[in-house]
Image (cartoon, rainbow, N blue to C red):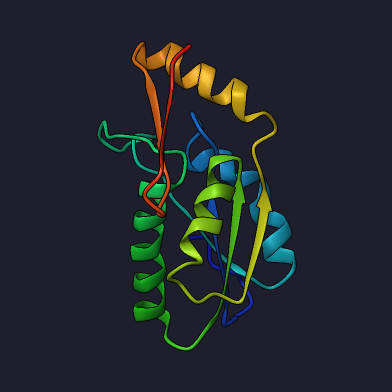
Length: 142
């Protein structure tokens, strides 16, 4: 966590994009500090220093983010909490809203989902499956 030098009850959790890591989220920290926020940055599943895991471009990651949101409220009590997501982090931040209560969400969505899926397929060399919380499954073969 990056603590604001001026005590504040405002927090933001910043989620990075696909094939980035928590250091990719650092570029937003100064702006939030200037606005009086404490910033929480983290490595999403299968990114940064985390172990290999299945990446879902938001669904599984939203479960992880939900746990981080719960932990943040448990640690800091009654706070103002927002989410900031870039690319996959934006999808994750929006999906977590089905369960989590936050004060705001700032998102920068996928610039081109087709290119992102193609890149993920190229890395994994297996068919790519997107699953929705509504139960639908889309298999993408390139």
